[in-house]
Length: 116
Image (tube, rainbow, N blue to C red; front, top):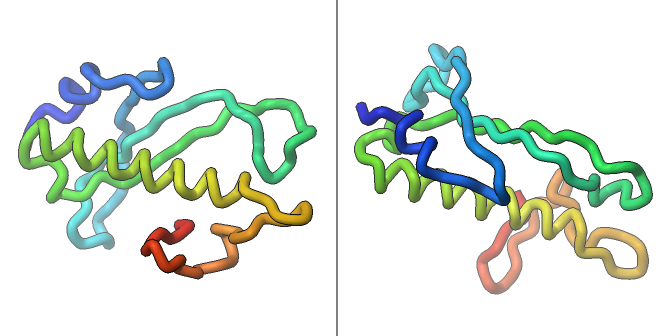
């Protein structure tokens, strides 16, 4: 297993650093005992007039992601992309309503993108 924290120390997302926290993954096959965490302040797209709040983004780290630095950092980027697609879906509204609500709608568009 690679030194995951050393790999994360080289990475930044929107001027925020990543961290790792212990994660009880004993019942989840294929997961390490780590959780990738990033904390940042941003608006809630579901409540656009509310003040910005601190978000905590956490993702369990799969064993397959910790085989090499480049594999791990590629996995981190993939998870960030998935998160951004989710946020875009929350923020894209038509006639005042989200076109796709990632919390309740599992539609897949013709381009193959899903709002997770």
